[in-house]
Image (cartoon, rainbow, N blue to C red; front, side):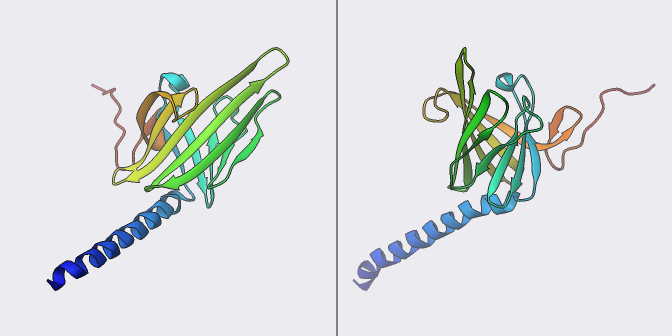
Length: 175
């Protein structure tokens, strides 16, 4: 009989500990990739060009290929905005949950003739293979995405993104 009276308390303690562990692991995603610079594979949406990220303590920077000398800055847990060019600007939000880092961005082009907005959501997570990126494209990023793709991340060798531990072999052999 005593086992049934302590069971709810034991379950509550286990759930609480699991909740604390998952909150701690969400904090670890930024700590585990802090101080790194990595590239994620690009596709049709980026004209085949890789995405470049730099991670510092408390922020993530994405270097936009259209503005190589500027960075789109994501302040973890806060909103931020900035200028990329004369008519181009960005607004970002970011948060951490379930050991994943969610980066929401809106890049806007406002000129006297037209106005255009590009919404993208990047979801970064780390597994035993390395960092991965889930890319959501749509009118409002992840809320009504029209495209969701998973991309590998690593370092650049030539124009290819390679994961740590992979070897790059040339397909040209001398006879």
